[in-house]
Image (tube, rainbow, N blue to C red; front, side, top):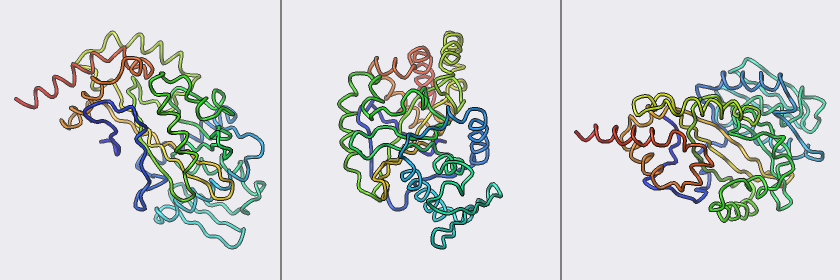
Length: 312
């Protein structure tokens, strides 16, 4: 089952942010760690500039991210990672990958990649940096597992600009979220979970795959029925975290993507009811924006039949 389940009995247009509690993790490591890190590194080897970009004058924020991610990960998962600091001399050990690195904190020449790019290769999360100037512009990022966008599309854009393609109904929510980001204090991160439904469990759904995805969707959607849709549709959850960085004042935006089939989640009838309630009350323009409309009917019938059979 998915570790996060952002569905209720009705659609909620709010951002749904909450403070990250002391026992909750900023960076999460799960059974997919080795597979997803290998996939990340393969994508970066194929086309580094497509998956990693950083505007000038972002190096301080990149070191901020590196420090936050390494210290948090070593603290929370000491069985997998260790970090030793002797002044500016740092030693990082990754037991899951049998790797270790010695580097000088603040000296990018002592790392094999830029600080943000390097630390992103140690964790499953996509790591993005939003500016500290009040616009929350996207100024750097390693983005390997996006849902319908890429760094080329958004680098340099403000937070509100990034979300401008979203339906008009959510624009007030985006403005409220922007205000919230402006006031995040250091060491008081927040988080939220977003949801979507896809016809594939491919993690990298960046813009270059959009045409192929849409063609596949147009071919597959008419064939889906209540008997087949459960195993062919994947629920895609993004656990998103936002953290103020102490040195630069920038914001670390982390995204961890989780997926499961609709059938697996709907095996829990309470989950099935909440997914159904959410879909039945989601505004039409939002369903269109999320590209759910082509298989919406098949999903609704599947969920209704699942719930009905459970009550017999």
